[in-house]
Image (cartoon, rainbow, N blue to C red):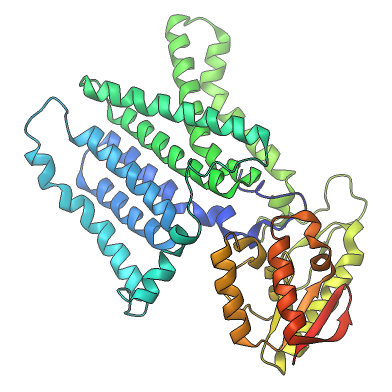
Length: 414
């Protein structure tokens, strides 16, 4: 699912939060909880705590979701509701907290070069919560009717699983395996906020993962139940023996034909042309990104712009790309963005963030700005059009047009 990600033709890996880079801590944390559900000792929970610390450090909002999931699992497995003696469990709380606290504190100190407690670092680290508030309360999910409906179906599934496990826990009938499922459901409920907050239909793929896990568990349970009820039914035996293999095969078959998978850099990236293409796809220089043969003319234009920017960057105070997919232009030209927002236009989600960036851009006085023709056309009515138009007004007021390169205009600072 990670390789569906974006609109057709978009480059998935320029959005790190839409790739596997967002998920390692999640995957390993639930592996740790599964280990703990099978054999009780201190190591799995200490590992889970450390993973929460890493998640908080590298992907702060996801770290918060993981912390909620871990706390829910600990409560469901370590604290009996009908027991008045919680003292033994409470004595183990420091052992569950310290690994995560240590990882996050040490990581923040390294990231801040010893200034993690400074106001400027804390402000930048927690900016996501100030600039991009999320949650069901936002409810701007209007880009996809199917997304709206599915998001509420997901919410229902998560609540049913979590509430049923809490009910069993209150009755003293819960199991550790059920606690793992409850933590997955709570994680999915939290993670759905990413989709609702961003209002991007393709972000629903990320919120689907916990649903898929829970549905797969339900299918397995159903097959086992029917197997005991109807032991002689051949279809049940086939589903039991080959069901997981069939599901895995379907996923791999789908993966081979995904453009996101073919374009993703890596040793397993396929080199063949897209299905139905008569010629081999071209790889854009210095990027590893494949381009269908029908778009080779635009590839020539792209490489001219990249070479032009590389030359001007060598003898100036840097270059700036005012284009919707700026990361690939920086990569191809061997230059780098002077700003931490990437991709730029898609990152400006609030007026305050836009105002702060424009103030920084004016003060930086970059020598050359490359503006794509699509920037003049308002990006086809996309949400980033007003951001692009505002930046273009700043460029026109402080720069003069130097030359044209392909579909770009190159402006020099006055």
